[in-house]
Length: 582
Image (cartoon, rainbow, N blue to C red):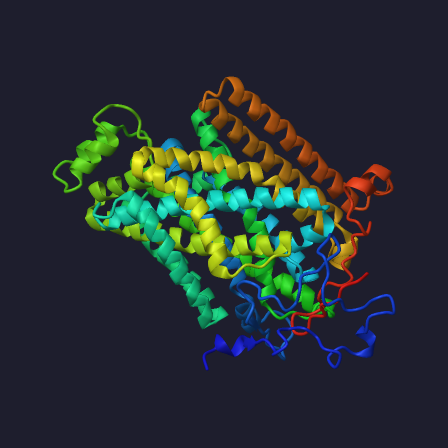
Protein backbone atom coordinates (compact mmCIF):
# COMPACT_ATOMS: atom_id res chain seq x y z
CA UNK A 1 0.00 0.00 0.00
CA UNK A 2 1.36 3.42 -0.94
CA UNK A 3 1.72 6.25 1.53
CA UNK A 4 -1.11 8.02 -0.26
CA UNK A 5 -3.48 5.10 -0.01
CA UNK A 6 -2.70 4.72 3.66
CA UNK A 7 -4.66 7.87 4.38
CA UNK A 8 -7.72 6.77 2.43
CA UNK A 9 -10.81 5.22 3.91
CA UNK A 10 -13.83 3.89 2.07
CA UNK A 11 -17.24 4.97 3.31
CA UNK A 12 -19.35 2.59 5.35
CA UNK A 13 -22.17 0.60 3.73
CA UNK A 14 -24.70 3.09 5.01
CA UNK A 15 -22.90 5.76 2.99
CA UNK A 16 -22.08 7.80 6.05
CA UNK A 17 -25.58 7.81 7.58
CA UNK A 18 -25.63 7.13 11.29
CA UNK A 19 -27.98 4.40 12.40
CA UNK A 20 -29.69 4.15 15.76
CA UNK A 21 -26.84 1.95 16.98
CA UNK A 22 -24.25 4.51 15.95
CA UNK A 23 -25.80 7.43 17.78
CA UNK A 24 -25.25 7.47 21.49
CA UNK A 25 -27.75 8.68 24.01
CA UNK A 26 -26.04 12.06 24.12
CA UNK A 27 -26.72 12.48 20.43
CA UNK A 28 -30.30 11.20 20.33
CA UNK A 29 -32.77 13.74 18.94
CA UNK A 30 -35.16 15.39 21.33
CA UNK A 31 -38.87 14.67 21.46
CA UNK A 32 -39.47 17.54 19.06
CA UNK A 33 -37.07 15.99 16.55
CA UNK A 34 -37.70 13.02 14.31
CA UNK A 35 -36.18 11.51 11.20
CA UNK A 36 -38.19 12.38 8.10
CA UNK A 37 -38.03 9.85 5.23
CA UNK A 38 -39.43 12.39 2.77
CA UNK A 39 -39.63 16.13 3.02
CA UNK A 40 -40.36 19.02 0.69
CA UNK A 41 -37.16 21.10 0.38
CA UNK A 42 -37.25 24.55 1.94
CA UNK A 43 -34.90 26.96 3.70
CA UNK A 44 -34.58 24.62 6.70
CA UNK A 45 -34.01 21.40 4.74
CA UNK A 46 -30.65 19.64 4.89
CA UNK A 47 -29.06 17.57 2.17
CA UNK A 48 -29.90 13.90 2.09
CA UNK A 49 -27.05 11.80 3.37
CA UNK A 50 -27.72 8.94 0.99
CA UNK A 51 -27.11 11.16 -2.04
CA UNK A 52 -23.82 10.65 -3.84
CA UNK A 53 -21.76 13.82 -3.69
CA UNK A 54 -18.99 14.94 -5.99
CA UNK A 55 -15.27 14.50 -5.47
CA UNK A 56 -15.28 12.87 -2.02
CA UNK A 57 -18.38 10.69 -2.23
CA UNK A 58 -16.69 7.31 -1.92
CA UNK A 59 -13.76 7.96 0.38
CA UNK A 60 -12.31 10.40 2.87
CA UNK A 61 -8.69 11.09 3.70
CA UNK A 62 -7.96 10.12 7.28
CA UNK A 63 -5.73 12.39 9.35
CA UNK A 64 -2.96 10.40 11.08
CA UNK A 65 -2.44 10.68 14.81
CA UNK A 66 1.11 11.58 15.80
CA UNK A 67 2.89 11.21 19.11
CA UNK A 68 4.79 14.47 18.80
CA UNK A 69 3.22 17.80 19.76
CA UNK A 70 3.40 20.63 17.27
CA UNK A 71 3.87 20.72 13.52
CA UNK A 72 3.69 17.39 11.69
CA UNK A 73 4.76 16.82 8.10
CA UNK A 74 2.59 13.68 7.99
CA UNK A 75 -0.49 15.69 8.88
CA UNK A 76 0.37 18.40 6.38
CA UNK A 77 0.67 15.72 3.70
CA UNK A 78 -2.75 14.33 4.67
CA UNK A 79 -4.31 17.79 4.37
CA UNK A 80 -2.52 18.54 1.07
CA UNK A 81 -4.78 18.45 -1.97
CA UNK A 82 -7.77 20.81 -1.75
CA UNK A 83 -5.62 23.94 -1.81
CA UNK A 84 -3.79 22.89 -4.96
CA UNK A 85 -7.07 22.07 -6.71
CA UNK A 86 -8.33 25.50 -5.66
CA UNK A 87 -5.15 27.18 -6.95
CA UNK A 88 -5.80 25.89 -10.48
CA UNK A 89 -8.40 28.65 -10.89
CA UNK A 90 -5.46 31.09 -10.57
CA UNK A 91 -3.78 29.35 -13.52
CA UNK A 92 -6.55 29.00 -16.08
CA UNK A 93 -6.05 30.24 -19.67
CA UNK A 94 -7.85 33.49 -18.85
CA UNK A 95 -5.26 34.24 -16.17
CA UNK A 96 -2.37 33.26 -18.43
CA UNK A 97 -3.59 35.58 -21.17
CA UNK A 98 -4.07 38.41 -18.66
CA UNK A 99 -0.48 37.81 -17.48
CA UNK A 100 1.07 38.05 -20.92
CA UNK A 101 -1.02 41.12 -21.79
CA UNK A 102 0.04 42.90 -18.59
CA UNK A 103 3.69 42.12 -19.31
CA UNK A 104 3.42 43.36 -22.89
CA UNK A 105 1.56 46.54 -21.86
CA UNK A 106 3.30 47.53 -18.61
CA UNK A 107 6.50 45.49 -18.48
CA UNK A 108 7.20 44.69 -14.79
CA UNK A 109 5.42 47.76 -13.37
CA UNK A 110 2.26 46.02 -12.14
CA UNK A 111 3.76 42.80 -10.83
CA UNK A 112 2.96 44.10 -7.35
CA UNK A 113 -0.73 44.13 -8.33
CA UNK A 114 -0.50 40.43 -9.17
CA UNK A 115 1.26 39.76 -5.86
CA UNK A 116 -1.29 41.56 -3.69
CA UNK A 117 -4.23 40.19 -5.67
CA UNK A 118 -2.91 36.71 -4.86
CA UNK A 119 -2.55 37.64 -1.16
CA UNK A 120 -6.12 38.94 -1.12
CA UNK A 121 -7.25 35.75 -2.82
CA UNK A 122 -5.54 33.76 -0.06
CA UNK A 123 -7.40 35.71 2.64
CA UNK A 124 -10.76 35.02 0.99
CA UNK A 125 -9.91 31.36 0.35
CA UNK A 126 -8.96 31.02 4.03
CA UNK A 127 -12.43 32.20 5.06
CA UNK A 128 -14.11 29.80 2.62
CA UNK A 129 -12.04 26.86 3.86
CA UNK A 130 -12.76 27.70 7.51
CA UNK A 131 -16.48 27.71 6.77
CA UNK A 132 -16.31 24.20 5.35
CA UNK A 133 -14.10 22.85 8.13
CA UNK A 134 -16.00 24.36 11.08
CA UNK A 135 -19.56 23.71 9.90
CA UNK A 136 -19.21 20.68 7.65
CA UNK A 137 -21.23 22.58 5.05
CA UNK A 138 -19.80 24.23 1.97
CA UNK A 139 -20.74 27.74 0.91
CA UNK A 140 -23.59 26.75 -1.43
CA UNK A 141 -25.10 24.46 1.22
CA UNK A 142 -24.93 27.29 3.74
CA UNK A 143 -26.62 29.66 1.29
CA UNK A 144 -29.41 27.09 0.93
CA UNK A 145 -30.05 27.32 4.66
CA UNK A 146 -29.53 31.02 5.26
CA UNK A 147 -31.23 32.74 2.30
CA UNK A 148 -34.83 32.86 1.20
CA UNK A 149 -35.83 30.87 -1.86
CA UNK A 150 -35.83 33.70 -4.44
CA UNK A 151 -32.47 35.31 -3.50
CA UNK A 152 -30.99 31.84 -3.17
CA UNK A 153 -32.09 31.02 -6.72
CA UNK A 154 -30.68 34.32 -8.01
CA UNK A 155 -27.37 33.56 -6.30
CA UNK A 156 -27.27 30.17 -7.99
CA UNK A 157 -27.91 31.73 -11.41
CA UNK A 158 -25.12 34.26 -10.86
CA UNK A 159 -22.62 31.60 -9.82
CA UNK A 160 -23.62 29.41 -12.77
CA UNK A 161 -22.92 32.37 -15.06
CA UNK A 162 -19.47 32.71 -13.51
CA UNK A 163 -18.80 28.98 -13.91
CA UNK A 164 -19.94 28.94 -17.53
CA UNK A 165 -17.91 32.08 -18.28
CA UNK A 166 -14.82 30.49 -16.79
CA UNK A 167 -15.52 27.29 -18.72
CA UNK A 168 -15.69 29.24 -21.98
CA UNK A 169 -12.24 30.70 -21.29
CA UNK A 170 -10.91 27.22 -20.64
CA UNK A 171 -12.44 25.92 -23.87
CA UNK A 172 -10.89 28.80 -25.81
CA UNK A 173 -7.48 28.22 -24.22
CA UNK A 174 -7.57 24.47 -24.88
CA UNK A 175 -8.64 24.99 -28.51
CA UNK A 176 -5.78 27.45 -29.10
CA UNK A 177 -3.30 25.01 -27.52
CA UNK A 178 -4.49 22.16 -29.75
CA UNK A 179 -4.31 24.47 -32.78
CA UNK A 180 -0.69 25.31 -31.93
CA UNK A 181 0.42 21.78 -31.09
CA UNK A 182 -1.18 20.28 -34.21
CA UNK A 183 0.54 22.87 -36.42
CA UNK A 184 -2.90 24.14 -37.50
CA UNK A 185 -4.01 20.68 -38.67
CA UNK A 186 -6.86 20.75 -36.15
CA UNK A 187 -8.83 23.99 -36.62
CA UNK A 188 -10.06 26.04 -33.69
CA UNK A 189 -13.59 24.71 -33.95
CA UNK A 190 -12.19 21.17 -33.97
CA UNK A 191 -10.29 21.88 -30.77
CA UNK A 192 -13.51 23.18 -29.22
CA UNK A 193 -15.27 19.90 -30.03
CA UNK A 194 -12.36 17.85 -28.65
CA UNK A 195 -12.84 19.50 -25.26
CA UNK A 196 -16.19 17.69 -24.93
CA UNK A 197 -14.54 14.27 -25.15
CA UNK A 198 -11.46 14.94 -23.04
CA UNK A 199 -13.48 16.33 -20.13
CA UNK A 200 -15.53 13.15 -19.83
CA UNK A 201 -12.35 11.09 -20.09
CA UNK A 202 -10.78 12.90 -17.15
CA UNK A 203 -13.93 12.59 -15.05
CA UNK A 204 -13.66 8.81 -15.18
CA UNK A 205 -10.24 9.03 -13.52
CA UNK A 206 -11.72 9.94 -10.14
CA UNK A 207 -12.94 6.34 -9.87
CA UNK A 208 -9.34 5.34 -9.17
CA UNK A 209 -9.25 7.11 -5.83
CA UNK A 210 -9.28 10.57 -4.34
CA UNK A 211 -5.54 10.83 -3.72
CA UNK A 212 -4.73 9.66 -7.24
CA UNK A 213 -7.05 12.31 -8.63
CA UNK A 214 -5.31 14.95 -6.53
CA UNK A 215 -1.97 13.62 -7.79
CA UNK A 216 -3.18 14.12 -11.37
CA UNK A 217 -3.97 17.76 -10.67
CA UNK A 218 -0.59 18.16 -9.00
CA UNK A 219 1.03 16.70 -12.12
CA UNK A 220 -0.75 19.22 -14.35
CA UNK A 221 0.41 22.08 -12.13
CA UNK A 222 3.95 20.68 -12.38
CA UNK A 223 3.65 20.64 -16.19
CA UNK A 224 2.69 24.32 -16.13
CA UNK A 225 5.56 25.17 -13.78
CA UNK A 226 8.10 23.34 -15.96
CA UNK A 227 6.86 24.66 -19.32
CA UNK A 228 6.42 28.29 -18.29
CA UNK A 229 9.59 28.07 -16.20
CA UNK A 230 11.45 26.94 -19.31
CA UNK A 231 10.24 30.01 -21.18
CA UNK A 232 11.39 32.17 -18.25
CA UNK A 233 14.87 30.65 -18.28
CA UNK A 234 15.42 30.95 -22.04
CA UNK A 235 14.12 34.53 -22.16
CA UNK A 236 16.32 35.53 -19.17
CA UNK A 237 14.54 38.71 -17.97
CA UNK A 238 16.33 41.23 -15.76
CA UNK A 239 15.97 39.83 -12.23
CA UNK A 240 16.44 43.22 -10.58
CA UNK A 241 13.59 44.74 -12.57
CA UNK A 242 11.39 41.75 -11.76
CA UNK A 243 11.99 42.18 -8.01
CA UNK A 244 11.44 45.93 -8.26
CA UNK A 245 8.13 45.41 -10.02
CA UNK A 246 7.02 42.91 -7.35
CA UNK A 247 7.79 44.91 -4.23
CA UNK A 248 7.52 48.59 -5.17
CA UNK A 249 3.79 49.44 -5.34
CA UNK A 250 4.02 52.23 -7.86
CA UNK A 251 3.62 52.65 -11.59
CA UNK A 252 5.53 55.56 -13.10
CA UNK A 253 4.42 56.95 -16.47
CA UNK A 254 1.46 54.57 -16.62
CA UNK A 255 -1.43 55.52 -18.89
CA UNK A 256 -5.09 54.52 -18.71
CA UNK A 257 -4.42 51.35 -20.70
CA UNK A 258 -1.94 50.14 -18.08
CA UNK A 259 -4.40 51.00 -15.31
CA UNK A 260 -7.10 49.00 -17.06
CA UNK A 261 -4.66 46.12 -17.46
CA UNK A 262 -3.93 46.19 -13.72
CA UNK A 263 -7.66 46.07 -13.02
CA UNK A 264 -7.94 43.13 -15.42
CA UNK A 265 -5.25 41.27 -13.47
CA UNK A 266 -7.27 41.59 -10.25
CA UNK A 267 -10.46 40.48 -11.99
CA UNK A 268 -8.78 37.48 -13.59
CA UNK A 269 -7.09 36.25 -10.39
CA UNK A 270 -10.02 36.29 -7.93
CA UNK A 271 -12.69 33.92 -9.24
CA UNK A 272 -16.10 33.97 -7.49
CA UNK A 273 -16.90 30.29 -7.95
CA UNK A 274 -13.52 29.36 -6.46
CA UNK A 275 -14.77 30.27 -2.97
CA UNK A 276 -17.62 27.80 -3.38
CA UNK A 277 -15.18 25.19 -4.67
CA UNK A 278 -12.65 25.51 -1.85
CA UNK A 279 -15.26 25.42 0.92
CA UNK A 280 -16.43 22.07 -0.48
CA UNK A 281 -13.03 20.52 -1.21
CA UNK A 282 -11.95 20.70 2.44
CA UNK A 283 -14.81 18.34 3.32
CA UNK A 284 -12.76 15.52 1.80
CA UNK A 285 -10.72 15.28 5.01
CA UNK A 286 -12.03 13.33 8.01
CA UNK A 287 -12.13 15.96 10.75
CA UNK A 288 -13.98 15.41 14.03
CA UNK A 289 -15.67 18.75 14.60
CA UNK A 290 -16.77 17.73 18.10
CA UNK A 291 -13.21 18.46 19.18
CA UNK A 292 -12.23 22.14 18.82
CA UNK A 293 -8.55 21.17 18.81
CA UNK A 294 -9.10 19.03 15.70
CA UNK A 295 -10.95 21.85 13.96
CA UNK A 296 -8.22 24.32 14.88
CA UNK A 297 -5.61 21.88 13.60
CA UNK A 298 -7.46 21.44 10.30
CA UNK A 299 -7.74 25.22 9.83
CA UNK A 300 -4.02 25.57 10.50
CA UNK A 301 -2.88 22.92 8.02
CA UNK A 302 -5.36 23.95 5.33
CA UNK A 303 -4.07 27.52 5.58
CA UNK A 304 -0.46 26.37 5.19
CA UNK A 305 -1.39 24.19 2.22
CA UNK A 306 -3.38 26.98 0.54
CA UNK A 307 -0.49 29.41 1.11
CA UNK A 308 1.99 27.05 -0.55
CA UNK A 309 -0.41 26.33 -3.43
CA UNK A 310 -1.08 30.01 -4.14
CA UNK A 311 2.63 30.78 -3.84
CA UNK A 312 3.27 28.20 -6.57
CA UNK A 313 0.50 29.72 -8.70
CA UNK A 314 1.99 33.19 -8.21
CA UNK A 315 5.43 31.99 -9.34
CA UNK A 316 3.92 30.44 -12.48
CA UNK A 317 2.00 33.64 -13.25
CA UNK A 318 5.20 35.60 -12.60
CA UNK A 319 7.03 33.49 -15.17
CA UNK A 320 4.48 34.39 -17.85
CA UNK A 321 4.42 38.12 -17.04
CA UNK A 322 8.21 38.36 -17.01
CA UNK A 323 8.70 36.45 -20.28
CA UNK A 324 6.46 38.79 -22.27
CA UNK A 325 7.50 41.90 -20.35
CA UNK A 326 11.06 41.17 -21.43
CA UNK A 327 10.24 40.26 -25.01
CA UNK A 328 7.11 42.16 -26.07
CA UNK A 329 7.04 45.42 -24.10
CA UNK A 330 7.18 48.41 -26.43
CA UNK A 331 7.48 46.22 -29.52
CA UNK A 332 5.46 46.81 -32.68
CA UNK A 333 4.02 44.21 -35.02
CA UNK A 334 6.74 45.04 -37.54
CA UNK A 335 9.41 44.34 -34.89
CA UNK A 336 8.01 40.85 -34.37
CA UNK A 337 7.90 40.15 -38.10
CA UNK A 338 11.54 41.13 -38.35
CA UNK A 339 12.39 38.54 -35.69
CA UNK A 340 10.25 35.95 -37.49
CA UNK A 341 12.09 36.23 -40.79
CA UNK A 342 13.57 32.92 -41.96
CA UNK A 343 11.44 31.08 -39.39
CA UNK A 344 8.91 28.37 -40.37
CA UNK A 345 6.08 30.28 -38.65
CA UNK A 346 6.73 33.50 -40.61
CA UNK A 347 3.54 33.27 -42.71
CA UNK A 348 1.45 32.72 -39.59
CA UNK A 349 3.12 35.72 -37.97
CA UNK A 350 2.31 37.93 -40.97
CA UNK A 351 -1.32 36.86 -40.83
CA UNK A 352 -1.62 37.27 -37.04
CA UNK A 353 0.45 40.40 -36.36
CA UNK A 354 0.28 42.29 -39.65
CA UNK A 355 3.14 44.35 -41.06
CA UNK A 356 2.50 47.69 -39.34
CA UNK A 357 3.92 49.90 -36.62
CA UNK A 358 1.12 49.40 -34.11
CA UNK A 359 1.98 48.19 -30.60
CA UNK A 360 1.43 44.44 -30.21
CA UNK A 361 -2.03 43.42 -29.03
CA UNK A 362 -0.98 40.20 -27.31
CA UNK A 363 -3.00 37.02 -26.89
CA UNK A 364 -2.31 33.32 -26.29
CA UNK A 365 -1.76 32.46 -29.95
CA UNK A 366 0.42 35.48 -30.72
CA UNK A 367 2.41 34.71 -27.59
CA UNK A 368 3.17 31.23 -28.91
CA UNK A 369 4.22 32.57 -32.32
CA UNK A 370 6.46 35.18 -30.70
CA UNK A 371 8.20 32.55 -28.57
CA UNK A 372 8.64 30.30 -31.60
CA UNK A 373 10.17 33.10 -33.66
CA UNK A 374 12.45 34.28 -30.85
CA UNK A 375 13.62 31.04 -29.22
CA UNK A 376 12.80 28.37 -31.80
CA UNK A 377 9.89 26.06 -32.56
CA UNK A 378 10.50 24.07 -29.36
CA UNK A 379 9.60 27.12 -27.27
CA UNK A 380 6.31 27.48 -29.16
CA UNK A 381 5.33 23.85 -28.63
CA UNK A 382 6.34 23.94 -24.97
CA UNK A 383 4.14 27.02 -24.57
CA UNK A 384 1.29 25.08 -26.18
CA UNK A 385 1.75 22.19 -23.73
CA UNK A 386 1.56 24.62 -20.81
CA UNK A 387 -1.64 26.22 -22.12
CA UNK A 388 -3.15 22.77 -22.70
CA UNK A 389 -2.36 21.75 -19.10
CA UNK A 390 -3.91 25.00 -17.83
CA UNK A 391 -7.07 24.45 -19.86
CA UNK A 392 -7.49 20.80 -18.92
CA UNK A 393 -6.93 21.21 -15.18
CA UNK A 394 -9.20 24.24 -14.83
CA UNK A 395 -11.91 22.52 -16.88
CA UNK A 396 -12.08 19.66 -14.39
CA UNK A 397 -12.14 21.84 -11.28
CA UNK A 398 -14.78 24.04 -12.92
CA UNK A 399 -16.94 20.96 -13.35
CA UNK A 400 -16.65 20.16 -9.65
CA UNK A 401 -17.51 23.76 -8.75
CA UNK A 402 -20.65 23.48 -10.85
CA UNK A 403 -21.67 20.24 -9.20
CA UNK A 404 -21.13 21.62 -5.70
CA UNK A 405 -23.15 24.69 -6.64
CA UNK A 406 -26.08 22.65 -7.90
CA UNK A 407 -25.99 20.27 -4.92
CA UNK A 408 -25.93 23.12 -2.44
CA UNK A 409 -28.25 25.77 -3.87
CA UNK A 410 -30.92 23.45 -5.25
CA UNK A 411 -30.55 20.42 -2.98
CA UNK A 412 -30.31 18.58 -6.29
CA UNK A 413 -27.72 16.07 -7.37
CA UNK A 414 -27.29 15.08 -10.99
CA UNK A 415 -25.12 12.27 -12.30
CA UNK A 416 -21.68 13.66 -13.01
CA UNK A 417 -21.94 13.09 -16.77
CA UNK A 418 -25.16 15.10 -16.93
CA UNK A 419 -23.64 17.95 -14.93
CA UNK A 420 -20.59 18.04 -17.23
CA UNK A 421 -22.77 17.95 -20.33
CA UNK A 422 -24.96 20.78 -19.02
CA UNK A 423 -22.06 23.13 -18.25
CA UNK A 424 -19.93 22.18 -21.22
CA UNK A 425 -22.68 22.53 -23.85
CA UNK A 426 -23.58 26.01 -22.60
CA UNK A 427 -19.92 26.96 -22.90
CA UNK A 428 -19.21 25.17 -26.16
CA UNK A 429 -22.17 26.22 -28.32
CA UNK A 430 -21.32 29.97 -28.51
CA UNK A 431 -17.58 29.26 -28.50
CA UNK A 432 -17.93 26.78 -31.37
CA UNK A 433 -19.81 29.23 -33.59
CA UNK A 434 -17.36 31.99 -32.73
CA UNK A 435 -14.41 29.75 -33.60
CA UNK A 436 -16.09 28.49 -36.79
CA UNK A 437 -17.22 31.81 -38.25
CA UNK A 438 -14.76 34.30 -36.73
CA UNK A 439 -11.06 34.96 -36.36
CA UNK A 440 -8.56 34.29 -33.60
CA UNK A 441 -8.81 37.95 -32.52
CA UNK A 442 -12.52 37.51 -31.80
CA UNK A 443 -11.74 34.74 -29.32
CA UNK A 444 -9.35 37.09 -27.53
CA UNK A 445 -12.01 39.80 -27.36
CA UNK A 446 -14.39 37.21 -25.94
CA UNK A 447 -11.89 36.59 -23.12
CA UNK A 448 -12.04 40.28 -22.13
CA UNK A 449 -15.84 40.23 -22.07
CA UNK A 450 -15.86 37.03 -19.99
CA UNK A 451 -13.46 38.58 -17.46
CA UNK A 452 -15.89 41.48 -17.10
CA UNK A 453 -18.85 39.12 -16.65
CA UNK A 454 -17.06 37.13 -13.94
CA UNK A 455 -15.99 40.32 -12.19
CA UNK A 456 -19.66 41.18 -11.76
CA UNK A 457 -20.27 37.91 -9.93
CA UNK A 458 -17.60 38.42 -7.25
CA UNK A 459 -19.94 40.01 -4.63
CA UNK A 460 -22.18 36.94 -4.79
CA UNK A 461 -19.37 34.83 -3.39
CA UNK A 462 -17.45 37.32 -1.24
CA UNK A 463 -20.42 38.78 0.70
CA UNK A 464 -21.92 35.40 1.75
CA UNK A 465 -18.45 34.13 2.73
CA UNK A 466 -17.81 37.11 5.01
CA UNK A 467 -21.38 36.99 6.36
CA UNK A 468 -21.33 33.33 7.41
CA UNK A 469 -17.79 33.32 8.82
CA UNK A 470 -18.65 36.44 10.85
CA UNK A 471 -21.74 34.86 12.41
CA UNK A 472 -21.09 33.52 15.91
CA UNK A 473 -24.18 31.27 15.77
CA UNK A 474 -22.66 29.51 12.74
CA UNK A 475 -18.94 29.55 13.52
CA UNK A 476 -18.97 29.47 17.33
CA UNK A 477 -15.53 30.13 18.78
CA UNK A 478 -14.07 30.21 15.25
CA UNK A 479 -16.03 33.31 14.22
CA UNK A 480 -14.10 36.14 12.58
CA UNK A 481 -12.64 38.65 15.01
CA UNK A 482 -13.25 42.38 14.69
CA UNK A 483 -9.96 42.96 12.90
CA UNK A 484 -10.60 40.09 10.50
CA UNK A 485 -14.07 41.44 9.72
CA UNK A 486 -12.80 44.95 9.01
CA UNK A 487 -9.91 43.80 6.83
CA UNK A 488 -11.99 41.32 4.81
CA UNK A 489 -14.80 43.83 4.25
CA UNK A 490 -12.49 46.69 3.25
CA UNK A 491 -10.45 44.53 0.88
CA UNK A 492 -13.59 43.07 -0.66
CA UNK A 493 -15.03 46.56 -1.20
CA UNK A 494 -11.79 47.62 -2.91
CA UNK A 495 -11.74 44.57 -5.19
CA UNK A 496 -15.42 44.92 -6.10
CA UNK A 497 -14.91 48.62 -6.87
CA UNK A 498 -11.89 47.79 -9.03
CA UNK A 499 -13.83 45.12 -10.89
CA UNK A 500 -16.80 47.44 -11.46
CA UNK A 501 -14.40 49.98 -12.96
CA UNK A 502 -13.17 47.26 -15.32
CA UNK A 503 -16.75 46.31 -16.26
CA UNK A 504 -17.73 49.93 -16.93
CA UNK A 505 -14.74 50.34 -19.24
CA UNK A 506 -15.67 47.18 -21.12
CA UNK A 507 -19.27 48.38 -21.53
CA UNK A 508 -18.08 51.77 -22.79
CA UNK A 509 -15.79 50.04 -25.27
CA UNK A 510 -18.81 48.25 -26.76
CA UNK A 511 -20.42 51.65 -27.61
CA UNK A 512 -23.88 50.53 -26.52
CA UNK A 513 -26.77 52.84 -27.44
CA UNK A 514 -30.57 53.02 -27.50
CA UNK A 515 -32.66 50.17 -26.17
CA UNK A 516 -29.67 48.02 -25.32
CA UNK A 517 -28.27 50.80 -23.13
CA UNK A 518 -31.63 51.06 -21.33
CA UNK A 519 -31.56 47.32 -20.63
CA UNK A 520 -28.01 47.62 -19.27
CA UNK A 521 -29.07 50.48 -16.97
CA UNK A 522 -32.04 48.48 -15.65
CA UNK A 523 -29.78 45.52 -15.02
CA UNK A 524 -27.29 47.77 -13.20
CA UNK A 525 -30.03 49.06 -10.87
CA UNK A 526 -31.26 45.53 -10.09
CA UNK A 527 -27.66 44.41 -9.59
CA UNK A 528 -27.01 47.13 -7.01
CA UNK A 529 -30.30 46.43 -5.21
CA UNK A 530 -29.49 42.73 -4.90
CA UNK A 531 -26.05 43.58 -3.54
CA UNK A 532 -27.75 45.83 -0.98
CA UNK A 533 -29.99 42.90 0.00
CA UNK A 534 -26.92 40.71 0.58
CA UNK A 535 -25.23 43.45 2.62
CA UNK A 536 -28.31 43.78 4.88
CA UNK A 537 -28.24 40.02 5.40
CA UNK A 538 -24.52 40.20 6.19
CA UNK A 539 -25.05 42.92 8.80
CA UNK A 540 -27.76 40.81 10.43
CA UNK A 541 -25.43 37.79 10.35
CA UNK A 542 -22.84 39.80 12.26
CA UNK A 543 -25.33 40.23 15.10
CA UNK A 544 -26.57 43.79 14.61
CA UNK A 545 -29.68 43.93 16.85
CA UNK A 546 -31.27 46.79 14.92
CA UNK A 547 -31.32 44.75 11.72
CA UNK A 548 -32.10 41.40 13.35
CA UNK A 549 -35.15 42.80 15.18
CA UNK A 550 -36.47 44.77 12.23
CA UNK A 551 -39.77 43.29 11.02
CA UNK A 552 -39.01 43.89 7.36
CA UNK A 553 -35.63 42.19 7.67
CA UNK A 554 -37.15 39.26 9.56
CA UNK A 555 -39.85 38.79 6.94
CA UNK A 556 -37.90 39.28 3.73
CA UNK A 557 -34.22 38.73 4.52
CA UNK A 558 -33.64 36.31 7.38
CA UNK A 559 -34.20 32.55 6.94
CA UNK A 560 -37.62 31.17 7.81
CA UNK A 561 -36.52 29.84 11.20
CA UNK A 562 -35.28 33.37 12.03
CA UNK A 563 -32.07 31.88 13.33
CA UNK A 564 -28.56 31.48 12.02
CA UNK A 565 -28.08 28.27 13.98
CA UNK A 566 -26.94 25.17 12.13
CA UNK A 567 -27.48 22.82 15.05
CA UNK A 568 -27.94 19.85 12.76
CA UNK A 569 -24.73 20.30 10.82
CA UNK A 570 -22.57 17.20 10.74
CA UNK A 571 -20.30 16.99 13.75
CA UNK A 572 -17.85 14.68 12.02
CA UNK A 573 -17.32 13.31 8.54
CA UNK A 574 -16.79 9.83 9.94
CA UNK A 575 -20.31 9.45 11.27
CA UNK A 576 -22.54 12.32 10.17
CA UNK A 577 -26.05 12.50 11.62
CA UNK A 578 -28.42 13.44 8.85
CA UNK A 579 -31.35 14.55 10.97
CA UNK A 580 -34.10 16.93 9.99
CA UNK A 581 -35.51 19.27 12.60
CA UNK A 582 -39.07 20.49 12.65
